[in-house]
Image 1 (cartoon, protein in one colour):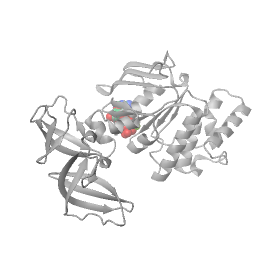
Image 2 (spheres, helix red, strand yellow):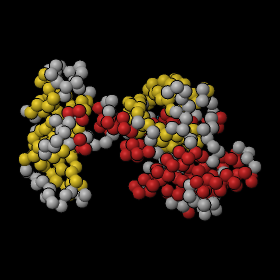
Image 3 (cartoon, helix red, strand yellow):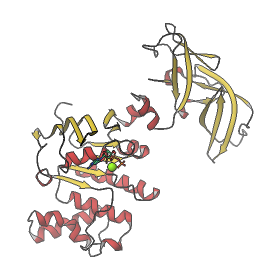
Image 4 (cartoon, helix red, strand yellow):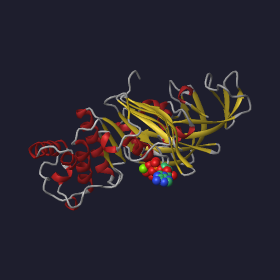
Length: 354
Ligand SMILES: Nc1ncnc2c1ncn2[C@@H]1O[C@H](COP(=O)(O)OP(=O)(O)OP(=O)(O)O)[C@@H](O)[C@H]1O
Ligand SMILES: [Mg+2]
């Protein structure tokens, strides 16, 4: 990245003797939407709070637009933040909540009113100006929190799990709305979530975090298809893992449950006799031999779930079980539990996990 807008460089954070963020590095482009994805306690909020200025790094530098902001106070950073828990002022109306930062900044009343009206339009709640937070649904409250964060036109928008308290349907519609507002305004945004589908669906790039570090930073496509570590492979998406033993490292052959699979070019660093974890995404596996799939393994159908348009099938391969989805076809009855079955796949789709 030639000239990143936000640059987090070698940032570390310890509380007493415990280090919770270790050598965290990330460059974010202007206008980019980057998600922090990781399990509870991995340090997502802590990194966000350091970018916002609520927490001081123990080491490292945070740069915005070429300026070192590491030691600036939150109100000197021009950063908008939405918190996980609803944090609206309960005794202020919607309009007063949205206008709060503008009033603090000394904006004239008429300008505040105009900006608040514009924000209410952007979040599609134009009628709600005079309501109080207790008169709003959770989704509406988070929309107001978003409007309050973007009203002062921040350079950087930080969203800490803004959707986690909402039900599944509202989450999906609001995440799309957040993304479209973010694109329209062109605000550089960091969005924290532990929901992998959420991160995959709305991000330009994702930083997958684990144990206070960014394990991998990449586009959703890269993260899903070329996971750099075992943790990323398991955390993002559904994965079928098979144990294999390298039979001939030079030739690239691996034995899985007494059958051979050829993984030429994928065994870098492995020796004959090594055991490996091999992984396949469900969509990379077909039931039966299929043209274009160069590898197959035999097993037995262990579960069949008829879900309507999709049939989810589980196949036992030795001691492992593999999940795959097939489309329903009225002309072909689904497989039955206990039937012998073959699965096929392309060896190029096989991930070797290290
Ligand atoms: N002020 C603090 N003092 C001591 N430890 C803290 C403090 N703030 C956070 N931690 C610890 O730092 C670690 C990372 O916390 P953080 O809140 O960043 O996690 P997170 O990834 O946001 O998790 P979640 O998904 O549950 O919100 C946790 O183990 C937490 O207990
Ligand atoms: Mg958190």
